Image 1 (cartoon, rainbow, N blue to C red):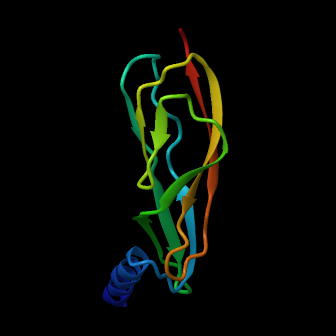
Image 2: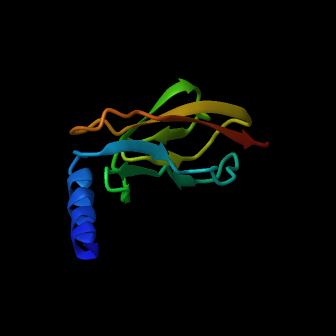
Length: 125
């Protein structure tokens, strides 16, 4: 029985990584906060997400997600941009507090999930 559950978990994780998920799946943004940014200095951060799937037999998988990332509200500091693969890069040019909401589009395959999360970057002079 234990071997059967383990094999089922491996198969489910493989299906989830290909964009499908036979159980109840949820995508979540796992990045908690961004590193400090300084005006005029090169900046790099990466947003991360995971997909968790639970099944009738009470097993749960937790695999890295590969979503398309986008800013859905607010404004990034001038000089920074976010790529579809979750890289936040550039050289900030303006001081201030910048609030934005990022979305992780995990809706490939059977998943139809697009979680969002609010972030803030404070840039001093």
